[in-house]
Length: 59
Picture 1 (cartoon, rainbow, N blue to C red):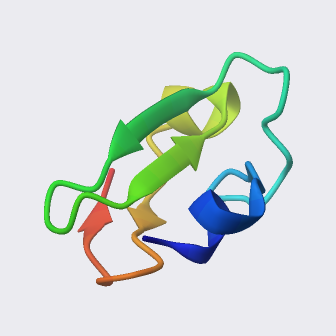
Picture 2 (cartoon, rainbow, N blue to C red; picture 1 turned 30 degrees about the vertical axis):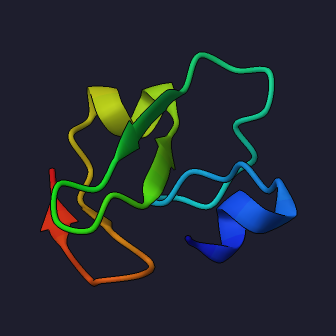
C-alpha cells in the first residue's frame, strides 16, 4: 500500500496538486495495484506519470 493511501493524501501523481473535490481519475497501477490519482488537466494533456511504489511509467 502506498503512503498516499495510508495518509489520505490525494495528490496528482504527475503534477502534485491536491485532487480532493476535483474531477480527478483514481485507478490502480497496472504493475503493482497501488492506487494512483491524476488531475483532469494531466489526463487531458496525457502527461506521464510514475507509480510511487514500483516505478511503472505510463501516459
